[in-house]
Amino acid sequence: MILVTGGAGFIGANFVLDWLATSDEAVLNLDKLTYAGNRDNLAALAQDSRHRLVVGDIGDRALVDALLQTHRPRAVINFAAESHVDRSIHGPAAFIDTNIVGTFQLLEAVRQHWNGLEPEDQQRFRFLHVSTDEVYGSLAANEPAFSETTAYAPNSPYSASKAASDHLVRAWHHTYGLPVLTTNCSNNYGPFQFPEKLIPLMLHHALTGKPLPVYGDGANIRDWLYVGDHAAGIRRVLEAGRLGETYNIGGDSERTNLQVVHGLCDMLDRLRPDPQGSYRRLIRFVSDRPGHDRRYAIDARKIRTELGWAPAHSFESGLEHTVAWYLSHATWVERITSGAYRDWLATHYQ
Ligand code: NAD
Ligand code: TYD
Image 1 (cartoon, rainbow, N blue to C red):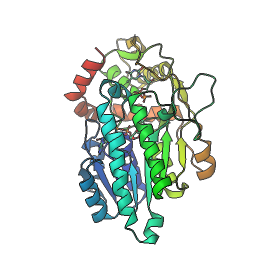
Image 2 (spheres, rainbow, N blue to C red):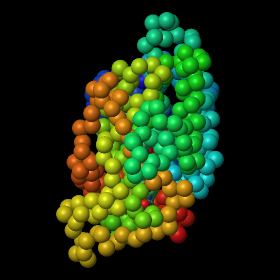
Image 3 (cartoon, rainbow, N blue to C red):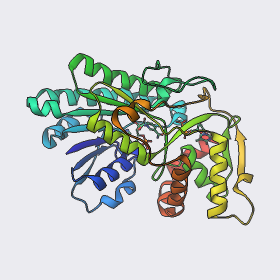
Image 4 (spheres, helix red, strand yellow):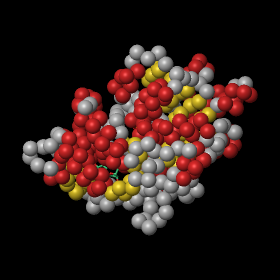
């Protein structure tokens, strides 16, 4: 079996669902169920004996030790993190606790477990750390995309905490020989994404007639990848990645934020027309995010050539799929856009 951390969040849940759709290997899912973790994301597995959710913290050493000892997974895939840049600006402490200290505790538990394995099991074992392209900082318009050798230059509390965790993972390989792999992926979108991130937030606001808040001039660029393609990339790295290596994952789909929002409005105009007019009328330019990175772009040649991975979706086909998913999952959206979520909107977008 494999141990997945953070598997009730957006990417983790997509990964677990895809894993069990393509393999019979069981998944033990350790998730703290923060505001971003959601049991509803795993509802399709409610009756599936191959999946078990344990509610807990990756930083809880006693719990992680016990899980490793009892279940003896052959791999750990670490998705658990605080993941939203704007929240990291309002309150960085949780990012330090989970992304840095939590990863450290997890690495230590895994190291102890791995040290006690038989040589054959030690050889087979993998620790895969899921990270982000944001660790590389911001690109100017004419600079080449981030490769695995681009120097780290994180600019937000979120990206700094992820960069720190990547360094710990690297050091646990070089110093202790732990069999690690790291992936650095560009911006994801798709089903089950919490509506604090650009695409689901814009969809939720458009469908409820609220303003669509575009930060600054809307010309910041992100490189978008459909979440199912990210999950497939992680599976491939787990299967065939070289130990101690990092792999950048991205979809060659650079878009300005305004292009993304226009694209979403146009799709909604077609699929769910509003009698009051195009959804574009709701766009508002609002104050910029402090320290807002201008451009991210991923050079994914290494995973493409070495491991034969390629995204199945173009940005347009992935977005169409995503919009259709949100339109047909109104209850999922309703259930998570109550209470604490509304407080976040009120504080952040005041
Ligand atoms: P998310 O915020 O949707 O989910 C994070 C999950 O981790 C939640 O289920 C949460 O409950 C859980 N969690 C948080 N703290 C925990 C702790 N201390 N112990 C156990 N569980 C905990 O995030 P996501 O978008 O699914 O991102 C998953 C991973 O992928 C993160 O490591 C993130 O840095 C990375 N990543 C995200 C993107 C993106 O575009 N969303 C892109 C590249 C990399
Ligand atoms: P986000 O989804 O928060 O991802 P990240 O900051 O990790 O790239 O934001 C994506 C882009 O969209 C980023 O440039 C900030 C911008 N953005 C807005 O313009 N308005 C919003 O309300 C949000 C949440 C993001």
